Length: 568
Image (cartoon, rainbow, N blue to C red; front, side, top):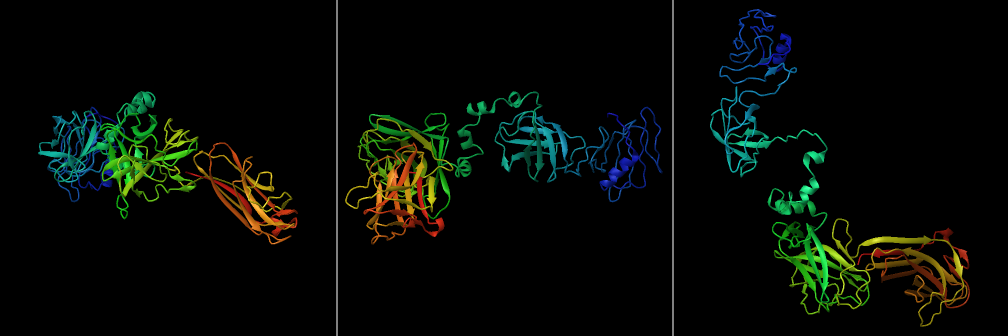
């Protein structure tokens, strides 16, 4: 034993009292190094002068005890019962009072030291260790080999017991050489827990741990390992489902022989495989069931839009193709759809159960708002994977001579068809007047006709989106009578996009509120301005937001012009 600072008897007594051990009717002695004479002698002292001499302590409710001291300075006190099993924590004065664990009887915790035996048949020899296996017993040891299959451990020759991991037999690799482990006895086997031991840091994190990003990229953490180990595809899906429908997958488009091919590739840029799969998440195919399923792609996967198939697009007009995956009773089928038909939008992803039409390969996939797949499916769950847009369209619809301008993966926050991308608006209650006529004949109103009362600029994010224009004029009147016309114009384009007309009922009459609502393809990603012009078919003065040149309702008449960009 190593000697150290002398422990006062009062400290020893106080400590054991705090642990519920009452020392009564006996004596505790300490010794000065190099002498055999006690420094403190208490009544009825019977303790001898040699190391390890036993003494009797009459402790309440306990059997005969044994106190160990060192010749010289008191170093360690161990109380054991008559069977030699430690009855309380060890008291050690090296570095101060420590080892204040709460072990009792056979429960431990025990320090088993380095494991003996072999990698799969371990043994431990513990001084003052357990006399039997007891449920709840905990033992810490240092592994000296890595197990290759199931493993057992035999403590102090009490018999070999299975080592388990979370209730299951070991399979190999759970116990690693030179690492600390704690085992706890359940009554039939020992459950395994590894202690995490960090290395001493002598430099920055990179110098100690290496380059984590490089390690992962090099394949230390692969999709295959995630799929087959503790993080399974279904567990991976449960955490990723709210953010995206495809894991480890990208969309790649190519054009050849006037046909378009959209393929799923991995993040490594290769086809999915057993060692580098792609996972796709779907809702349940039963409408009344609210869970989801996961398909694992392990082979090349693509869909072809054949030469001549227009998908409902027109020449030199911007459009967008949405890419989806169908779960056809466990078979994955990749598909495409053009959700925009004129200014109508298919509600992609709204219910996520749909049917598809076989593309056919003969250039006949010519409809918008229809799902096209390699083989038709009926009432199957589908998942939105992304979209491909042609911002200026194709010179000849159906001749796929170029790849998409943009490709985007579906993700958390990604807009679906019909969603508002942005909204720009102006509103005013100010009065204004004009005298320019808009004829009431069968000609399109011109930008030189009527007077301009409201404008609103917007910069579309995609030429393949829609612009949804809404306008309301709180009041419009004309002193000369005739019909009042409101017309919508864009930029400096001469012809009006849309117009409404109201018969005022004679000179000085008011048209009341006038509403106009119009949709158009954005067709640009540059700033564009929508304009509201108004005028009478007869002469006289037209008053906007008033009557006879005067304001109405104190300037709060509700006249507005709003332009929304809608995902197409």
